[in-house]
Image 1 (cartoon, rainbow, N blue to C red):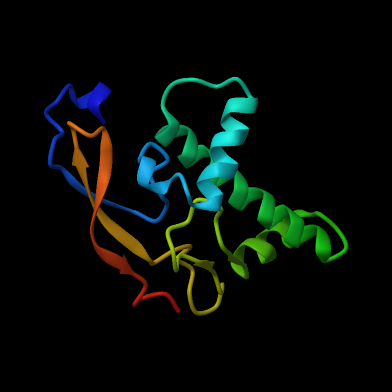
Image 2: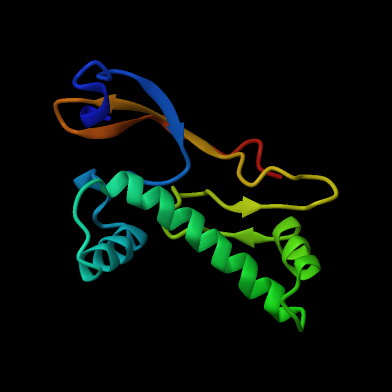
Length: 137
């Protein structure tokens, strides 16, 4: 945010379901270590948070394809069915966050979120309250 908002984003509230890999407080989380190790091994530099978002989407896509393959074939139908009926915990997920989809009753990928606030001086998002998992079915 600091690069894009040039300081004017300080204090902005948003929400997330993944941990901020820029926050040293998250370094002890196994998923953050896995992500940072892969990031370094790939020789990447720059914005960890943007890369984390791509990591999360890619990881979810791979989980769908693996589940589709378990059906015996990878086809348009098996991919759609896998995506509509998947339970998956992302590597960078905040504690308690699970992606649950049931194509007949719940089509929202994730309903658990953490309210966060940008702290310009620290260069990280600070957690505001607990992760809300109340609406995950």
